[in-house]
Length: 298
Length: 259
Image (tube, rainbow over all chains, first blue to last red; front, side, top):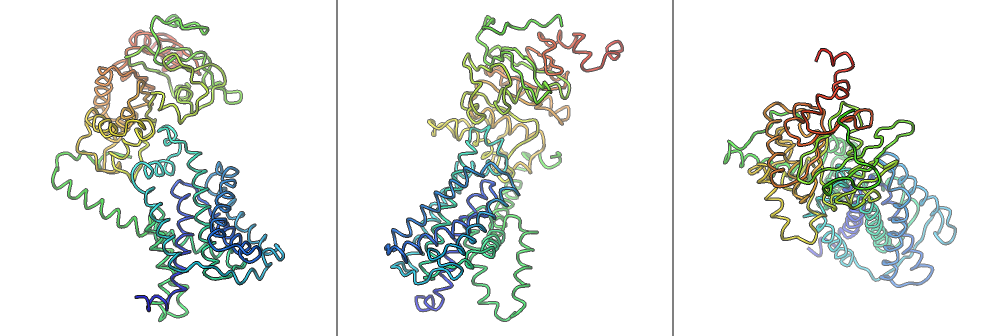
């Protein structure tokens, strides 16, 4: 196992940081906030850690904490400014935010290393540290996917006015979603820069937004499982699909399109719906008379 | 206008403590007076109704009472306490629950989850009791056996009952119902009417907003009629619907003679 893994260590690291990035995108989505600012948080976390390690000689873990916290704080402030926007407008504002950051990185002079970026971000963190951190984040997120928190998230996403009538402070939750998304995105950037030992404006561009988004679309936006499944799928499939060669891009486009059209909740929703259908079938078989259903209009 | 005996704005002129009191409540949108100077006080334990044609301002009034709509003027009081400035998210915590004009249930959640949603915030200090509240709401609305199903599996009438169950699971002292029988067939209407009556027997104060005259006369103890944002009549339901102003609002000036 260990030998096998060492051959794929870089890919494994990429999977971990993409998973975190996807989780960062997912948290606001679960509250109906369509935000693409996660790539911006990733950039803030990555550059903060890189600058502190390279220029200021900070040690690894304080630099990771700083990257995470600063990204979280900036995300929260961004949320204060734009959380009241809706749908497309919010999406555009967050895309702009991410784009502005990559422009800043290009024009940051010696601080950010300009278009070439920063090199030699050496730290003590290993892949296993990174792995454990991702597991801890997933455990924390899994608590929001059960019980009252998960119900509140659903209500805020599906019907904010209803959520408010149920006593849920929608604005506070949405702002909190920015904070959490920012911290996780920043953490992803911090860890990623330590693994790769380098960061450049090119690595925080629009392509990363698209990649994170496709992960969520294929995996599913409702659960951390979707982020993991999607990340593994998109990074490990090329290894097994070598034989399709140049057709790879076409195959990928096809997979995303099919997922978006036929699996609106991703792979995770397929499983959940299957389980629910099984429950209904079982219930109808045991109490046929109790169902007063389905003939009524919606 | 003869049946209109509105209380004076200045102080409480009721011989009971109103569960809900509106004092000169007004909501203007620019130049449009959606609600204009409504004053009323609900008697505890009664089912009151607000009757009015579409666009008469009754839904806006309900919005004002649930704090989803900003008051231009006036006050809303719950059990004597002015809550005109609290946000919409705090209203359920005061003891005011509502249902909506259209069915608003979470589609991917079971009936049970949809109902427990209302207790999540309100019953924070009573975690152990939440389960009991939900079970009791399910029993009182006749939803046993439906708990695990999602809304799409239920008929429209059952969906509306889930909404009422969700509203009462929060243990409200006042239940606001926005057109609870809209789009229902006769049997389903009768069922909802009976359900509201049984909740009244438990002592729950209710305010119904409807434009269905027959349903209102059958269900309400006291009726207000609204048109163009103002109250045009109030009193016993049979009297209110016979008021010339109410007939006019519903049937037009000429229709009254034929009616």
